[in-house]
Image 1 (cartoon, rainbow, N blue to C red):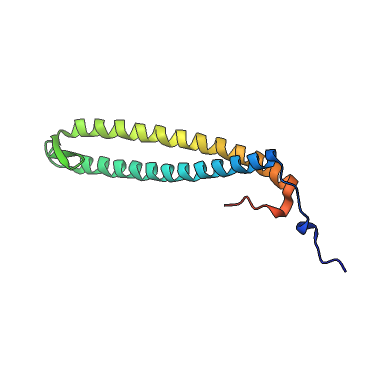
Image 2 (image 1 turned 120 degrees about the vertical axis):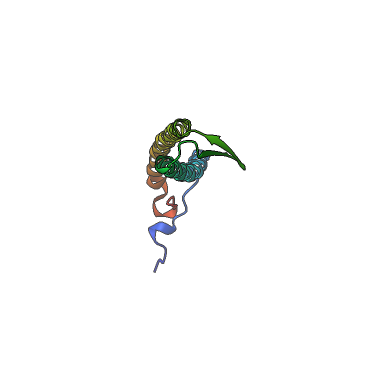
Length: 128
């Protein structure tokens, strides 16, 4: 009685297959980095929204202080709102760029997954 199953069959790994596996691994690593960057950007956007709300509820327009590192600089509420708007626009742009790159990487990974699963079947695991 033969105890081997179709999954136990040795499959030759060609140089092209190894390149595809390595490329998938690199793409997966970059995807994880981008997701972390995207999360950080979302947190920064939330902090900017909170700062905007704080400026809006500030009673005295001259009591607004902008933080730069460990320093606080006095500012008017209009200047603070402009600063927040510029920072928020920059973060929104970064988030859009991250989303575009994530989409592109996921497309590339899906192509590689189909190639590798087509050849190796259940022998290879490409899910994170």
